[in-house]
Image 1: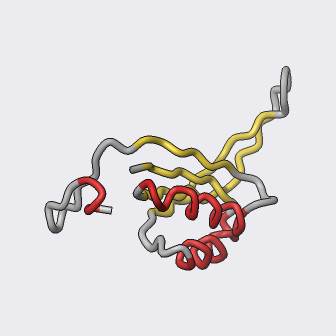
Image 2: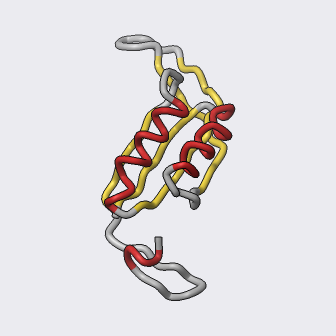
Length: 102
């Protein structure tokens, strides 16, 4: 299992959701955040920009399709994608654990 964090432009959310639906990824969390980008080495200027943070828990077989969908929908814009190992997941309503909870 993996946890994918993506920081994207807010206006890319509909495109991302459409692409994720195409690869059968329907559950995600979207948060409004602000990103700070520096002016580069030695630069002191920071610019706080609105962004959307997506958190998507997927089983191993969905990692590549999810990353491809994110890149298709938000590629060429500002943003970043991080892939983290996910040790466990628990669905509170049903008590399912691990891959079944996703």
